[in-house]
Image (cartoon, rainbow, N blue to C red; front, side, top):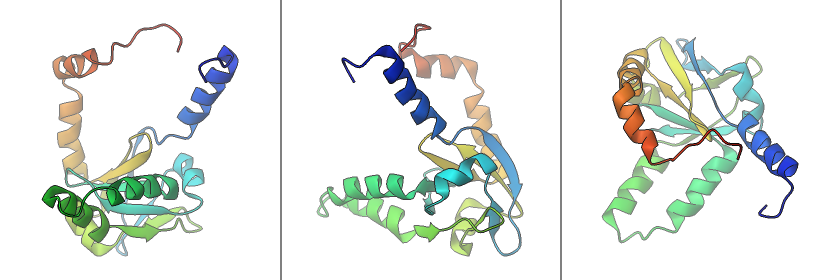
Length: 166
């Protein structure tokens, strides 16, 4: 891409952004554990998805290709490393393959609903390559952290973001 024309670079970036999970939505989790997926996410999950435990009492939903990328990296980690074994256990023992049904829902297994504290409602939050599912209470705690202007300014300093075109 280094010598690519500006128009090409912009179209590649635009396509990547259009294939991201963005935004936040609130949906109900029915008594069977089905969660309606936001319409704009469904096309990206046409081949199915994987759901697994997240890192902050939430759930992570990834496309098949994103899950395969992480799987490739996890497999490269040494099984003699105790932290690598814990990561494998966390990632794989809580992982499930899910498909979007005709009504646009996925079925969240009971043990994952329990892990994330999902009881009737959930917040679906886009995080770029994947999206997260949160209980409304846990998401409210996250939102408080995300709304801290001073902390956000500190977080973004390292990015050296300019208003110039990429």
